[in-house]
Length: 138
Length: 483
Image 1: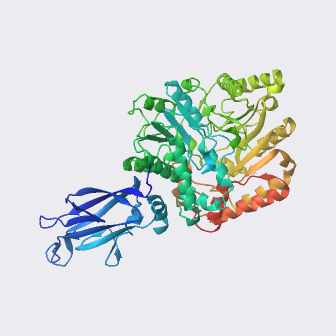
Image 2: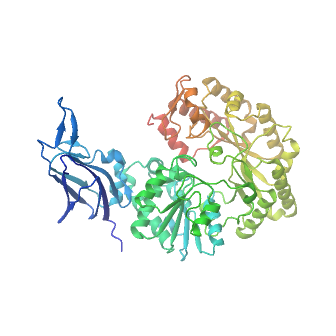
Image 3: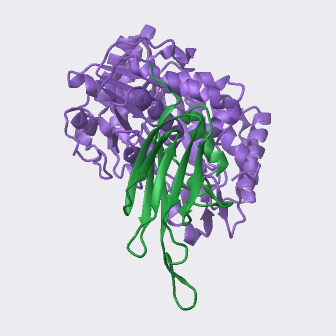
């Protein structure tokens, strides 16, 4: 018997290193936590049950040294993680929605440059209802 | 959901079905064609036209406009979300009740894309291991252009394969395990050569429920491509060459389908029936002969058709056309302004139209006029001329239906699309009626008004003006400035 509220979420992250180190990322769902091995591109797969929240916990960035600036204050490099792609039950989440989805310190962005907790909200009763609604939220 | 209750599942190797939404009163034939290909391989197959079930259900849905908005654009409306969930789940479950290993989904146009995404979603959710292959013009921006949609579905695992272009050979190759055949998960595909068109098995409609259609007719295809090069048309970009079947082969197919399904009405689904006059003559003479000898089982047919000058299609052609059982001839007139028509690339005169109408009157033939309102060179003066033309020709209202459509759409990869800069028009994409003429001042709203004005006038004059859900939806968008 298929439980339609059970879903598979694939998230793809891009890590950018500075000072020979990456930020750390933990993906937390309920009592499960996964520490993501940093890589230029890294895919994480989670099985969830709608409605659900996934928490992304970022750490390991020294705000004093991990953003490299030139003498004029322009950013040369910044240690960060980017959420580049999300697929829910094999359906690609539109990029236009993705850019507006995570909220960090009041700003909608997929660029994670702080040590922080980001909550991804899957708020409907199953992924179909969540997915068809996305276009109205763009 | 009871929409699909008429489909009785039996265990098969392959299920093929059309995918909503296509607004049609007759069966879609791609599935019938492909089912016959599957059967040739020795596999078992159910060939379903489930779009027909959804079409019937949609027509009486209390939120039909919102359904159309979802089918066309994937737009969200809370009022229909439960129904869509149930619709697509039931759709997938009904397919899977046949326990197939392979599922083929046929997308007639891009308007099937939203439905395909969520049908595949349910299919893979319920049975992840089932192989899904999609095909049809609706999978792609156009048949020779980008594959963004199909590639996305492939990359996320919603589908396993897509097939591009004519599928008679490539689908056979796919079933035989040759997945490197041109057109399978690739942009390159091969047009079917003329010599091979007569060699394929006849379409198999055994699993179609003919009670679902307003018009109980057997679809037939006699050709690919077109003999004309109209500037708005994307068909000629898909099929560069005009290929046609022999009149004899078409006639044999009609005889077999008549004996199998007991239907005497046929609807030709290709771009035109009289592209090759030699084969057309063979066909209509065979049909006329059959009808004369079998008055109780006489065939009738409707088809897309081109008007030709009197010197190449004189009265004797009209007479045999009538005897062959022609009922409705769907003619792309596009405009009654000659200069507009000539710019399009349709080189028949208004005198040719007058002659053709008089022949229709004499031989009891009916015409569905397909009009394009707001062609790039069309002005208010042309619209006024068109209105006057219909007033002058009101005598033909009993043998004509008119379809004004949703105004000119400028589709990707057409001549108009490639020349939009020199025409000084700006195209904003889907819906493809969303374009602006910088010099002419032509806007979606103006063209929508022209469509409505002409529709109203012709209705008042007593012409039968066709109104379908799709065009109504597009016109609403244009009129309300929602594009």
